[in-house]
Length: 166
Image (tube, rainbow, N blue to C red; front, side, top):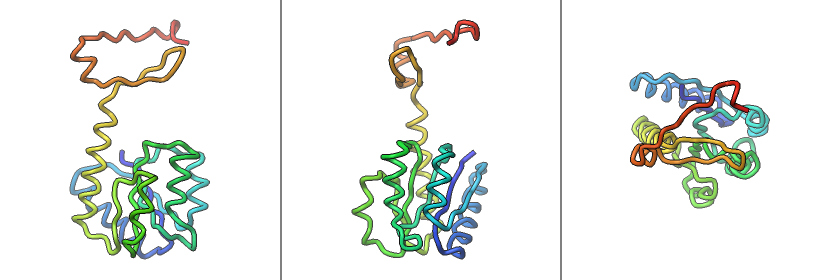
């Protein structure tokens, strides 16, 4: 399930982008969930409690607030590195100020279907790379190792039984 958020103060644009996202997802037989926000503060409060989002389409200017400031909040305060951000705007001049938040793309309105398809391709490519790691936790730290390393070294992972698992 691909969980997405669209945040823009233009409700007509949000609806049009939602329809475009639905169309592309259906063509790819993707299960999806889309939530829409028209104010950055409401999205910020939502993200404080809900961090299982995969992809956010975030307008640069939402009711006189800057979307990339929310991007900074997502990355630096909430420390949510796994959420992919795609900035959207009527103006391409903001592009350089956005790199600190590591967006996967920047789309200029109106958004074309081919551009949205390319963004989803990029998202899935990055997501696959993220998922190609085995995550584990020991008493000291959380760690990851590439699946390739496990297979190459023929490491056997033995799950703990529930009574031995702390």
